[in-house]
Length: 304
Length: 252
Image (cartoon, rainbow over all chains, first blue to last red; front, side):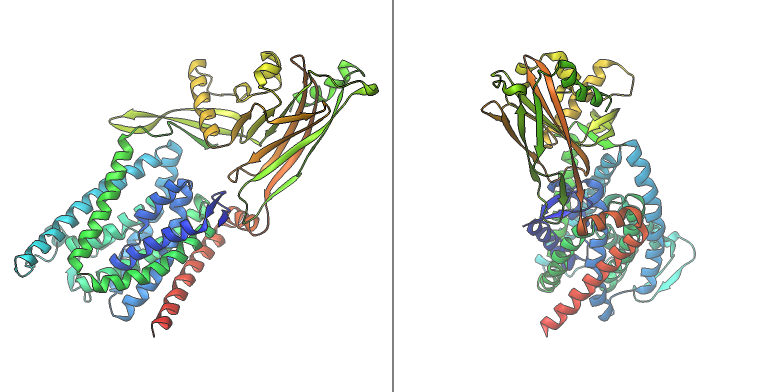
């Protein structure tokens, strides 16, 4: 069944888009990532203009995060104090991102920059996650107890001034660290159409050293607010938010998220992290190859 | 547009002996609604020969449907440091967003090259007005790239035997309008060609516009962007919340 998207200016198959949302929803329910790093490239691959794909996946991630935030919130799995700091950084980051998007679009380099960002970030995060997950799986096979390193967070974080207590996260660190982290993910949300969960979650675990119980809930909380801000910024600057596309994706993703959340309870966390690392690395490699391969279209047209 | 008076006058200049065209299109207005997956335009009409003269065997018809013109920037990717990056660019001031030509015989066999350029018959004869003022060879390369891109996207097409002429007086042609064409005023031009020259021409306008909910959404996004953005966020939140409530009920 085909449906015409008013902003994208083309008709799409409803089931393809809903299915895409569903797939991403399963991931978001399982890993606490928004899944934007998959939706956006897949939509572009399907033929939706890149600007529309990026702008429309932001509100989709907002909607997909609501149920997660509510679920984690009721289980006391959200550190609102930490979340507020992250959101403050994220809001500032998305404003800067909106400005960067404009500048890069005028220079004609937005696609390249976004692809390089995807490659570098996903590649780096994927490798770190895969190593960690494989390490803990191997340790479990050998019957060793998972040894928790004595250092909770990265030494650089400990050096930052003005420490605050984040009770639920079990941390006594400077708010500057989450503020900067929020800021970076805010930029990424606007530029890449991702929630930034795939950066936030590992960074919260490995760099900030947050208590695992609140990591997913807090990252969803930050993503909810930052994607909402990015939607507004896109609506006002690029005019590329396609509500029809967003609703189709949402229908799929909210359903998928429920399935994903249940799968997450069944599968061991190490295997979960390893499979997320695998997906992240596949996307990164695809992006990297895309940069080096001769593109199908040497020429691109931009209306003036 | 400058050619238009000339084209209308052309049959008069040739004299009363010249045949006339009575063209029409199946739709004067194409409305894009939620189920729009493209449209098919039927261009048809009659060739009127004055004084009951017998229809000429050599009369050929070419029809051209053109979309609104727009200025565009064309960028070219180059391999720089192992990556394909946008490097050079050129701008063109008048690029039709859509161009479809159908003729009763291959266009280069029924008109001479000069006529083809004058009437912009054929994709390669379009005047795209490059404004870089640079090297003509480079403009040509960008122009070829632009045309190739448009052609592959289905925006530009040429159909050699797309016009059917019956009994030398009635003609018809079908032109497919793909779903992703931009909105605006399109023109359907019909040319009567004899011995390599255009002897009659006529134009009809076709409006392609979003309508109903699609038009409303597009207009809101453009003119009330803040409210539109707020609404998009609110709707996402509501959908997400409703789904979580629904699934909680379902589980119980």
